[in-house]
Amino acid sequence: MLFRVTARTVWPAVFLCLAGTFAAAYWLGLERPIPVQRTWTAPGTVMPRFYVATPHRRVALTFDISWGTQSLALVLPVLAGHNVKATFLLSGPWAQRHPHLVRSIVQAGHEIASHGHRHDHLSRFDRAYIADNLGTAHRLLRETSGQTPRFFRPPDGDYDDLVVTTARELGYETVIWAVDSLDWRNPGVDFMVDRVLRQAFRGAIVLFHASDSAQSTHLALPRVISGLRGAGYSLVTLGELVAGGTPARDDPRGRKTRPVTD
Image (tube, rainbow, N blue to C red; front, side, top):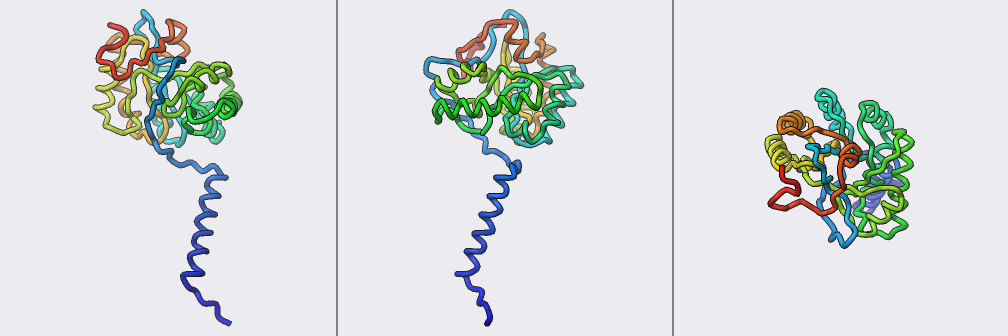
């Protein structure tokens, strides 16, 4: 007896095949791009840190990583070549998949901070979920880096009072940023360099990415570093920046004037 191949027999098989493929990708933890969005929750009364009020001409370069390895391999040599120490905010799953890369960041003298575990907008969840997210990432970052992270940046800079207070209860200070390079949009090297140099001020926290979605960060960095140093700025880690001033919790983004007049 011959088996007849019809649409009624083919499509269920195709569906099962696709479902199996997606399930395997999920459970095996295959890396894939995370859709980039930029949304900020109305802050309420408990504010994170956006910059540091300081008399010193210092800024901190920070790099978020949640997926991919190619951008990091390009960024680290640039920082080393210019003798710059920065802060890398790593997601838990990325650190778990790439412990050797976490160690390479640490061995280069950089600071490790947390980007949480799952790439969720945490303002949508309750305290138990937020605590589990941060706690899982914390364990993985400590195991892979040997450091105890003390700064946390929520995915996409999304936060509310509960996110900030829960993080603080777990020993973290929530850090957003004052200057966004917009490297995640890949707007062009000239655009990124001009934007960072124009918006920088004493105590600014600058956002970059070393995820593979940011394809030109390593090309903009040499000019950003030279430009900032030419303007008299020292480039330090978040920890060093905070140690030299007072954490500022007012959001400077979008203002026509900078928080600190140089």
